[in-house]
Image (cartoon, rainbow, N blue to C red):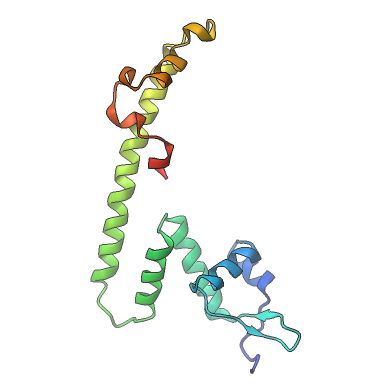
Length: 152
């Protein structure tokens, strides 16, 4: 295989995309990045197109898009003449999820602030924080006890 235009090592690719080589290998394994060309010694080599693609993936993940959504967005970005209506739909769906998560986080923050404010600083047996955590009925907002797993 010709190495022309494929002169970047995995370490350099990772550095340029501000990630670790393990991240590059992971994205290759799950098919977000195409398999790299290899030197005769078996070292991966990448070109500028991979740098751009990895930067896109990293940026989309920073925005909180799921791997499945990133996969869809990449497929669409590979078709530049395609209407962006589907891209809009993915982004709109993600925005709604983010807004919902923000509402739950806001309710959680308010409940935590209330618990901390009402803590008298005495003994654990009379600790308001322990009391509220032990009994969901004592929460002011229904959303505040959805659990941390709902926020991710």
